[in-house]
Image (tube, rainbow, N blue to C red; front, top):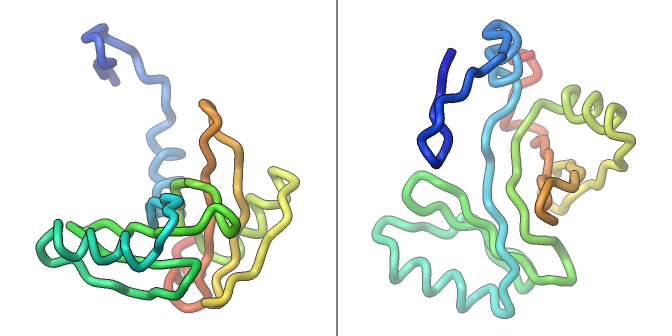
Length: 138
């Protein structure tokens, strides 16, 4: 399989297609989180700027909005880092946390997650919801 990188050079992708399909079957993109000083102001701006946006949850330290088919979380610096989040099943979360020697945190909505450090000083959250992502996808 071949792909092109951003400068147009051809790259050979050495991936086991069966393994890639297995991984993608167990992982789904969930949300992007941005630190903001004022959750309510961020939500108001997005609601006004992106037609069809809707607030899924909001309090003083965390807001979740759906806009253009994506979920955006607005968080305070004291509560969460900026991050990308990927959703897995509960058992996959446990397996990945053990693999990465990470502690799992429980959240107010019943979800559980842990963070990984990614290149470029970025963070990735691996998250599982109790009733959203079925265990039978594994």
